[in-house]
Every structure is written in C-alpha cells, then in structure tokens.
Amino acid sequence: MSLLEVNDLSISFGHKKVVDAVSFTLNKGERIGLIGESGSGKSMTSLAIMGLLPDTATVSGSITFEGKELIGLSDKEHSKLRGDRIGMVFQEPLTALNPLMRIGKQIAGPLMIHRGATLKEGLVKALELCVKVGLPDPERIVRAYPHQLSGGQRQRIGLAIALACEPALLIADEPTTALDVTVQREVLNLINSLVDQEGSALVFVTHDLPVVSIMTENIAVMQLGKIVENASVASLFQNPRHEYSKRLISAARVAEDAFSQGGGK
Amino acid sequence: MRKLFKGNISLIAGLSMISFTFFLLILSYIWTPFDPLEVNPDDSFAGVSATHILGADNFGRDILSQIIVGSRVTLLVAALSVTIAMSLGVSMGLAIAVAKRAYQSPMIYAVNIALAFPAALLAIILAAVYGASTLTAVSAIGIATAAAVAQVTRRTAAGILSSDFVLAAHASGASTWWIVRKHVMPNLRASLLIQASAAVSISVLAESSLSYLGLGTPPPAPSWGRMLAGSQQYLFVNPLLAIWPGIVIVIVVLGFNLLGDGVREAFDPTLRRSET
View 1 (cartoon, chains in turn green, red):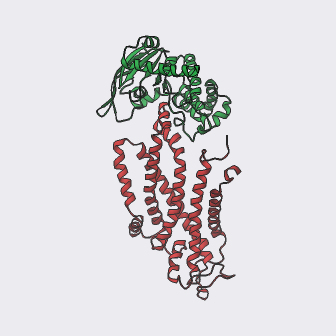
View 2 (cartoon, chains in turn purple, red):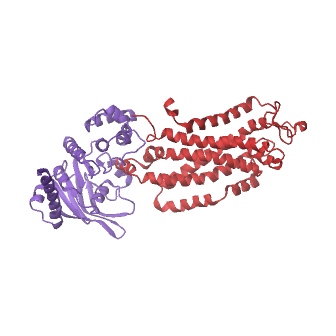
View 3 (cartoon, chains in turn cyan, brown):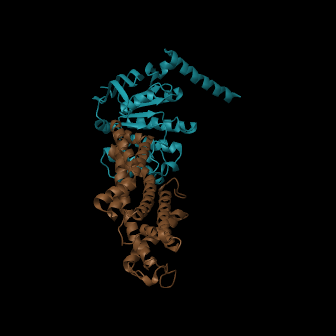
C-alpha cells in the first residue's frame, strides 16, 4: 500500500479551477517534486493534503494517506494527522513563526499537541531538535524570539517544528525561495539528510528546476492546475516530452551557461 | 525589573500619576482634613489658606477633602466599567473572529448597532428605570465601551488569524482553542492594553460627564464630575473650584494613557532595547 495516493484531485474557487484532475502516488520514504510556475496549483495541492484549503474552495477526487481518505475528513480528525504524521515547512520562515513566542515554545508546540508533552518536556526535546537541525548554541536559540535569528536559522526552526513528531510525510512548500543563495544549499542539504535519516516521504514544491533535481528522484511538472509530465529526474532532463518541461529545462540551461561563461572570463 | 523601567518614560510617568490617585484613595480611608460633607457657611468660597489648603466651595465644604474622597467613585467606576467593557468586548470580538463566515456578518451588524447607540442615552434609560446611581453609570459606560472594544478586537484578531504563523500552527495540528490561547491572545495583548488604558480614560471622563448631568453617583457623595458641575455656576466668582477637580481628572486620564503606552513598549520584544 502506498503512503500517499492522490487520485483525480480537483480544486476550484467558484468557477475557477486551480487544480485539475491531479493524480500521483508516493510510497514510504519516496520523494516527489511538484514543479510549476505560480498559479499552477502546486501549493493548493499540498494544502489539500494538509486539509488547510480556505473554506471557499470546493474539492473533488480522493487523497488517501496511510489508507485513510482525507477528502471530506472532519477538521478535528485531519488535525490529528497534521504536525504528527504529516509535517509542513513553509516558504517564509519569518512570518511562519509567531513573533511574540520564544523559539523553544514554538518547537515544543506539536509535541504538546500530539504527544501530550508538558511545556518542560517539550523544551527539553526542543533543545535536541535544535541540535538535529544543525543550530549552534541551542540554549540561546530556544530562548530567542524569531526576529533575533537569521533567515537560514529560522528555516531550520521551521524544519525542527515540522519534524518534531517524526512525520511519515514531509511537505516542503518552496522552503528555500526566501533564503539567500548561499544559505539555500545548506538548508536543502539539511532537508535531504534529515528526510533520509527519518525515512520520511517528501513532497517538495518549487518553481526551481535545479533545486528540485537535487532533492527528489521523481518530478511532476504542473501547468495551469494539471500535471503535464511525471517522470524521473534523469528521463526528464534527457527526454522531456511536454513543451512546458522543455522550456523549464532550457531556462535552467541558459542560467547555467550564463553562469559558466561569466566564470570563464 | 530595573531593565523594564529603564528609558521607559511613559511607564514611569504613567505609574507615578496612577500611584498618586491610588494614594488619594487610600488616604480617603485614613485621613481627610475635614469631613468632606461638613457644611460650614462661614467658610463659603474660602480661598487657599492654611485651614482649607485648596479652598472651600459655596457651602464651605473643604475642597481637598472632597477631592480625596471623590477618588473612590472615580476609581470604582473606572475599575468596574473597564472590567465589563474588556471581558464583554474581548470575548465577543474573539467569538466573531473565529466564527464561521456565515455567522460573522449578523454578529458584526449587532456590534455596529450597539456602537451607534449613544452611551448617554443608555445611561438615561438605565437611570430612568433603576434610578441614577453609580451602578447604572458603570453599566452604561461598560456596555457602550464593550462595543468599541469588540470591534477593535475582532479586526485585530482577524488579522492575526489570517497570518502565516496561524496557518503554520494549523499545520502543526493545533485546535482553534489552542490557536486563540497561544497565538491570538499574546499578539492581541498590546492592542488590548492600549484599549484598556483608553477605556479607563474614557470611563473616568464618562463618569464625570454623567455625574455632571446628574445621571451618575447621586449627591451628597463627592465625585469629581459633580464637583465640576457644581463649580460651573461660580466660574467667575471662584474659578479655582473648577480647576482642582479638573486637574485630578487630567492626572488619572493621562496616567492611564501613559501606562498603556509604557506597558506596550515594555512587553513588545521587538521594541525592547537590549536582550539576547
């Protein structure tokens, strides 16, 4: 049985269809990249898995996770999975953290919600998680407020919160888009190694082809709410079938060429 | 503790002014120069002197004694009406903010209607039904202020609820109750403090106006508002009669406003000067 099975998922707001008959499956420990331009429906797909779509959205199709149907699941039942079996990392690490709450308490949150941990136990675990996501001086970090940390540090905190309950599935929604290029690579490597270590499956949402190609073995290319191509990284690069995939690859190559030419001078 | 006060002039000034008012309150139970209700025709319109430090009014009652005892009514009204306004207003505002979309608009309309209803009219109705007393004044001020508090709370809470960190908290499996307690309330605190301090000022002023109109604390219990009202007739004969209660009202109102500012500054970690 696969871990996550998305079947014929459609999401619309009024008459506007933002996700159109999307299907993919993900086995335990597997990774998939959802790539597409903004408005292609990749974020909406991940929010649908989390059950965090706005009230105004109408959803059809099916999403099964660990054999459980998620579409039409009550919010209460869905919230038992969120943060526990499914973790999520957000795009903006600053706004995704409560500005008035110390970091330690925020990391302890999921443990207190799902594991019945007391604040004290949660804070002890928060220290361990800080070390795990490679933050130096965890005692200082857990006492700090979000504005006292750098972008990269904040995204590591976001990762620590998402992984606090050792989820079977991690959804990363453009986790490095808001970061400096130098920090991006570090955070990507960290996600790579932690997902390996935990044996979690990964849904990696991005618009950046080079980034997704180092993160996942399979890529689903999305355009206007549809998956237009679903292929392994190698076959996508060697033999892109859809017009939009070809454009994505040539855009990435242009950037690479420009970079290597600039370096040669 | 010292760090809290360092450079926070609003907090220091506000606290000093409020302490002064509370000092008057405590003093009123211990000592007053005269019985504030003692009528003494010989001293009518007595000026500032060693006997009557702040002078005496038309009946020869000692002004200082009246001001000291008047602090009771003012602070009682402020405390009670702000408690009513904040508890009613904040719970209504939060309830509307977390309610389902379909229930929100009728609730918002209800608050707007309550807001449009003049507080003085409410006070007149209550006074007509139950007789003018401190309690009717407190209820009228409390209910009228609650509508304003509810509206500001709802708007601020709605903004917080639509922020990314609330979405992230949902993604961590948090319930609505958890989010309200751990995320909305702390982020609402600064706005609530400002509202509470403003509500104190408003209710002190409103109590003065209601007493002035004869809708508040009935005579002869001294009240700063009624002292002002009484002094009106003698404004040209003895302007000092209006100045003394005016000064203490200004001190209380200003004190609570400054306290609100100072506390907000002290509690907002992004405004704090030095901490790692």
